[in-house]
Structures are given as structure tokens and as C-alpha cells.
Image 1: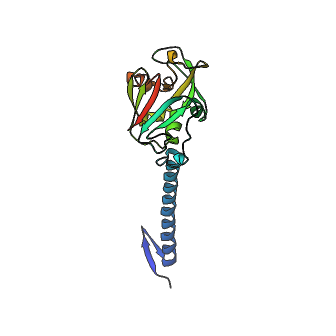
Image 2: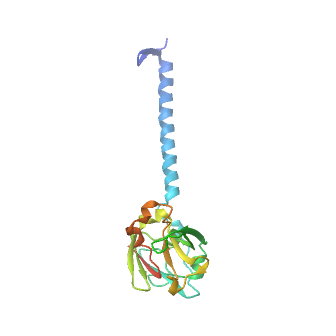
Image 3: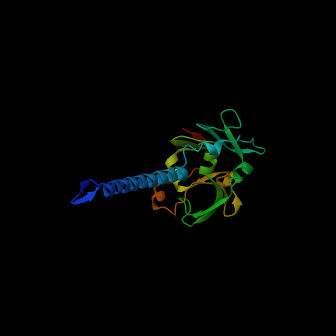
Length: 200
């Protein structure tokens, strides 16, 4: 004769009691598996150090260097530096962004490459990028700003950015897509004539 156990306000047999315990354990394990799957999905989404993206050696530039990145980076093509010419940057794929700026209330078409993609390629790790321009202007760009998908603009309204047009590179924020980006703090990070980034 099976033993009788009390479960809550009910009396059930030993077989039923064991089955109930098994169901509870399976439910808990299922919940754990769901949480583990969500955690792994989050890691896949945000990356874990981006080490795999910087596994291949960085080729040397064959044209004039327009961007040099130094500091805490994994891949270099010169002593302590990752140097990029225009062709190397364009190989990341050209993206477009239409937005207004501090200098123009009318939205303008910017074309360039993802700053995040460039940093991932060389395994850049840090909290801040010190952006320097040919005109000696400097600004600190927090890594957390990458959530806004910053653009390294190479062209404005279909025309290549030249030195007199704030080129050859211009850090562009999607100002019209996020109201917070219209704050003066972010306006100061639109570094034009950009030629150097130092990762700290």
C-alpha cells in the first residue's frame, strides 16, 4: 500500500507526491534554461570583448593615412598604431545618415562608416576616446556614445569632405533621432577634421 503524504491542504499518495516533486524540479530547470538562453543571447548581441573581430592582422595602408588610432588596441599596422587610408575605411561599408547639426538646422546627408565597426576591427577596449583634429581641437568621446551608432563621415551631400569642408573625417551623431543628442555636451563631440583617436 503506498504511503500517504500531505501536500498543501491535500493528502496524496507517495507516487503522486514523487510525480509532483519531479514536475516542480522540471519547471525550475526549464526556467533556468530560459534564463541561461537569454543571457547567452545578450552576450551575442553586445559582444564579449570583441576579441574575435580583431583576430586577423590589420593590413598596411596603401594610400595617404587619414586616421590613426592609438592606445588600448589589439591590432596595429605600425608600432603602437592602427593606420587607415580612405580605401581601408570604405571597406567597412558606406552608411548614410540624414540629420541636422549645430551648424545647420536643415538636415544634411552624411555618408561614411561606422565608428563602432572600426574600433571592433582593431579590438579597441576602454572607456573614452580622445578625438583630435587637424586644427588641434580635442574632445573626449565616451565609449557609451557608441550606442547611438556614430558615423565617421567621409562625404557630405554626396561630395567628399575636404579639409576646407571639415574633412577628411567628421564624427557625426544621429542628432535628429535622439532628442538628448541636441544637448551641447554632444555638440562638442562632433569633431571635424578628425585625424587621430586615442583609446583610454
